[in-house]
Image 1 (tube, helix red, strand yellow):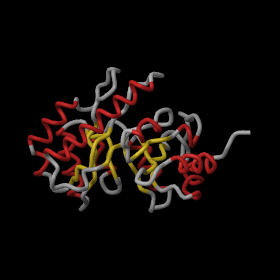
Image 2 (cartoon, rainbow, N blue to C red):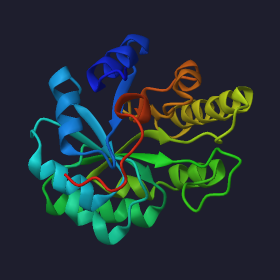
Image 3 (cartoon, rainbow, N blue to C red):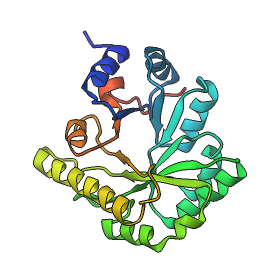
Length: 228
């Protein structure tokens, strides 16, 4: 017999040490599934599509903390700026500037993470570690009062080689520590590390993750045709 969303959540919670928050990845899952997790006590949910997240925001309880985890196009920022709690996937200075612009219009300061490419796989999105260093050292972000850089996000290579996964997560943790010591001494909130998914969150936690992004282990396989 398949376990329920509530039972799955409780199992994950038991495995999270103090200081590690769970982002329940609810993309492609219906509102009913999110409500079951909400009723069990989960409050942070992650989505990767602007339209889907906005639809769910409008339908579901307003004390949910919505995290955007997917590639974010600049022309879509305005739709989530009024309510998004944390954007995990800032992958360009241009995008960060647009988030600042739309956050200002909404009268908010939006928390953001810089997405860093640490995996061996090719990807179109994310800073290289050196590009991340260049952005932080350049200081342009200091002129954006409506965004707050809170840390880094990364995804490890999709491989069964857990030693490689661990090395990649460790490298992102080291980059966070370097950034804290070099460019972010006056920003105590720059401490978040978003890394680890259903198949590798134990390695991520060992490497210092503060936000784990878990979907399948909670909700089961995604229904890509779900509507909520």
